Length: 486
Ligand code: HEM
Image (cartoon, rainbow, N blue to C red; front, side, top):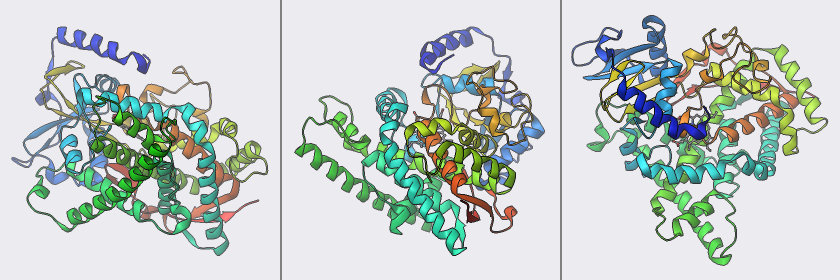
């Protein structure tokens, strides 16, 4: 089924499910041993939530329940179940209901968190702005930012110093997303000024923590991290308001001109009579895109580099491939060049498959319903685990092997030994990630630039690098040594 016909698809599934008789209840599913009152809370470290849920998935099977205090949560890595729930939004399923209030109190209730009918117009706007054809016009900027990253890495290679890869990649994605959204070149890669990046970096993990918090203590008293969050939110707001001021000024001076960036497009829409959009919606969506576009792509790239550092032969193959595609150029110079970078896209997808930044998609049932013969009471949280299916040999031949070539064949679900439906790392259905083309383009650009110009090795014991869950799954640290190659 294509994503365009999800609406009728969801209506169809709803009818079928209403007719079917539910066979099982949540209580009938396997579950790890729970304590009275606490449930499984004592076994769940928020920073390792994904790892613990994946371990239980191996022990208990693909579908089981856990108890967070008194609440019973459905956890599944079953692809068909996940797809049914993901596609049936905003119908039978929604994002976790704690997400919207937490986003609202941060002033960030944009397309990611908003639910019901209010979500559609925001989604349409973001989809238009992020369409693949828009990205072609954005390419020169992406090229400029890639060149800056290359120069930064060149300085580090010349000096023989270790490179804090996470920091560099986050600067790259902040610069990229800010230019796309505001048309403003914040240039954190060269300026040494990383205020906006630091503030965004504070918001994302606290958001992740709060949506699964059993007690919303911050509504009654604040810990140091909550005060830090307030300072960061204030700093981001004043930065975005300054951008809104510039955009408004330009729109006043050039009335009727086509919007030059996403912010101008949102403001134009907000100004239409009965648009239903408020200034707060504009602000929330701008920050949503900055947040959604920053850590996800930067951390996926960091994982790709972590994996490549252990594979000198693959690095040599990628260097040859980059030379073939780019010739003497140091970064991709034309949008058309990016079509020659299939192998780099393969590296990106393999890294995402094995070290997904989105190991859990948090949903909730809007109504008492049935999923694959299982009765799910209204309000049940459903945690979809995306990685187990990705590492299953039934979905990918020799699934534990890092094989970029598995992505370079013809694009259809019949690709040999490869079940494309099992790749849930950008979600699925009507709320599928609208940033996937941008993310894929950014990753190709960075990986081709890296491979064309540098080889990489670990600057410290690779085992120091650990997976940490903070809404996105990131490496706790990553220091590499880069060496220039001709
Ligand atoms: C490797 C990079 C990325 C990954 C793995 C990723 C993953 C995801 C996932 C799993 C979702 C939830 C989808 C669902 O519920 O079905 C999502 C939603 C979203 N992503 Fe991404 N994302 C990435 C990059 C980006 C970028 C670059 C942007 C924009 C600049 C972006 C913007 C969004 C937005 C706005 C949503 C919410 C869509 C909605 O609820 O309608 N993402 N992403």
